[in-house]
Length: 89
Image 1 (cartoon, rainbow, N blue to C red):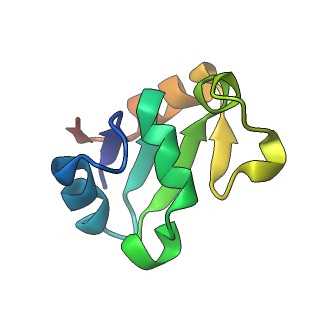
Image 2 (cartoon, rainbow, N blue to C red):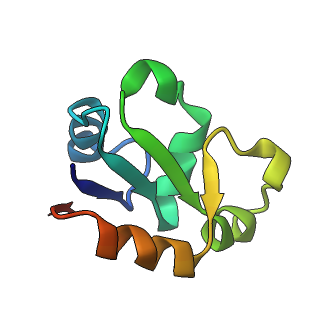
């Protein structure tokens, strides 16, 4: 199990590699410009559990209804950081 942090948009090749190589028990958190990955077909790109930082998503003009992944706040993000034994940033 690992926590994978994605903070760059869809034109960043390393982020795509991290997403693609995530395992089923990994958690992927999209933060900052990483929230733009929401509009890619994440279910085809990854097997990992996907989360969007709600504040970052809403700050870019989207609504909760636009989210294709779980929206979490920063407190829930900290819970994931503490829970996962490994971190990939």
